[in-house]
Image (cartoon, rainbow, N blue to C red; front, side, top):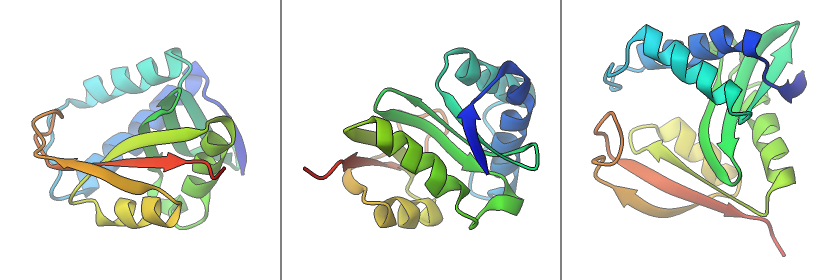
Length: 145
């Protein structure tokens, strides 16, 4: 596995991973069009926020963050459970003293992952602050002193 800054040519693969997760998650409402997801992926790359994991030349996952705020961490279905998400998160941890993110309250696998990786729950919301209108949880991580 190779971790590297995302290039504009990676945006379609990033959009496919994101769109695939949305489509495969029954409780996730489809609030953005496929075209909108492509534009969002391109924006994450253009801002320089995104690191991709590649295996065999294919993008297998990505993490997008602005300084300490993680905006997205997704792994392709075939690569889940193989350490891609942890490798991407470890790369982010290596460059920051603290990290924060939101995950949906219904996304129990993500919650288990973040807790296992040393994040702690900061607070919960009713979902009024996200596009999907779903309750979410704010998680924080701080490097040990």
